[in-house]
Length: 74
Image (tube, rainbow, N blue to C red; front, side, top):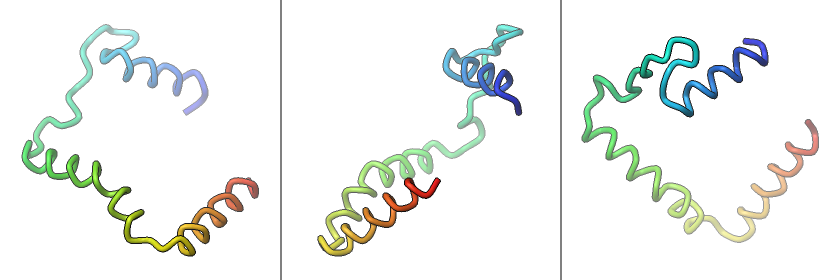
């Protein structure tokens, strides 16, 4: 995709309808089990906090250093 196509896709997704035809976008959760969607959402809400509470300060520092190094190497 080029820049223009990407921009059109972002706008379409943000307004919830096709940019050129005005038709509503399909529901991304259509055909999925609503209970499974909710379980996934609940796990995502507590995932980062639960992981952070289990990490030691030393390990958090290692992860932060690795992330910073990765960002600066781009």
